Image 1: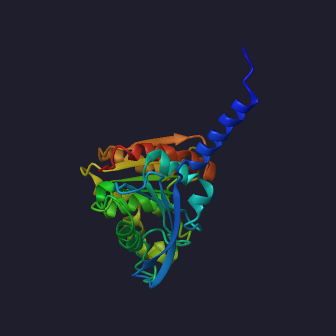
Image 2 (image 1 turned 90 degrees about the vertical axis):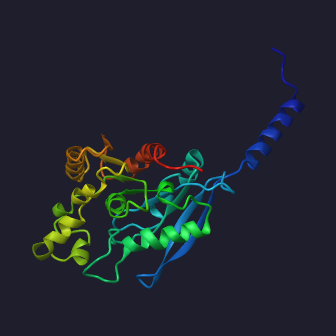
Image 3 (image 1 turned 90 degrees about the horizontal axis):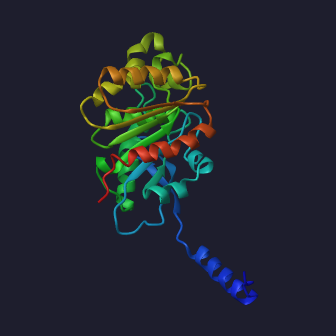
Length: 274
């Protein structure tokens, strides 16, 4: 084999470097989105794929867990690559330290359900080139955010087409007044009906015959695996199509980051692309 001249090799390396540097990359915005029902503004991270332009794109609303914030997903997962790979917009809103993505009847200053469903969605649709209807929006979240994703789909099926829950806290009756739920729903002993009716185990009944996408995913070492099995069984009883996964792992970022691709691939079956 003849040796490659040094000058030719340097030329090839130069153009390879130029091509690498000039490749388009995903764009990341950090914006404050007003919460009209809570008299505050909360930050969100918006990840736009490199392809973002005039063509409207679907949006994934990625919800954090209890004690988390809007930065968690972005700091732990490569959302820029995910946005490019699946050609969609990823929005990471703030659901509060223990907001549970619900409108509290006890603490009237906590309205994270309305904030996500209306304030955040409308803000994103007005500011970016989205597909501004239910077929262009999905919800996905971990732990508290898994509850949020599935419960918001069940409560507002006119706003979203699918939901994904990772390690979701899906049966609130078994939460024992913990994780800030007591402040939002009241003591279980006196407000048990509110706890039950806020639980995904009951809310999924709203999704029967609607053709919505549902994916549940939980590690077999996760303390919330019983919740997920109960909801999976309830969906089976209601004959509601869904994907259900149990894989090795616990309640951890290693598990959730690995699970994200499963959910984004699944959502492609339900998202409208204009």
